[in-house]
Image 1 (tube, rainbow, N blue to C red):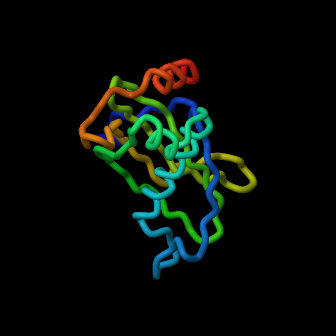
Image 2: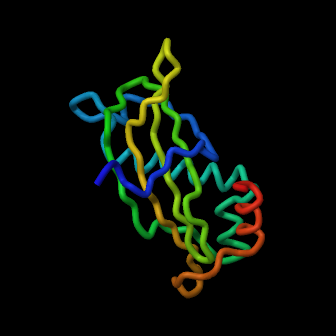
Length: 151
């Protein structure tokens, strides 16, 4: 398989900056692999916030949360202490109760400005009722905002 065939090279719909701190690295001086999952999660939270939705409000008012159903991650190059990354998010498959995202961790090379893909993931999140713990339709106000911001 050639680097996660489902992934496209579309322009990202959302970019969230991250700086690598010493605490993010392992004994080899590179970002610990699980930290990319944290960066991807934070970018999805910030994307939702940029759309005008706070997760705490969605939980309190609509009794829903978004949970990761599956994730497929490729680690291509290491990030190191003090690197500045861009975590990107693209909507791949917005559905009735699930959304599939393509997310990447990029480092912009100094001098050239060329983005280098360090890690990329295909993430499927489900909208889940806090009351039943079962998948439910994404509230119309969110689904509408997602469609208007991605077309």
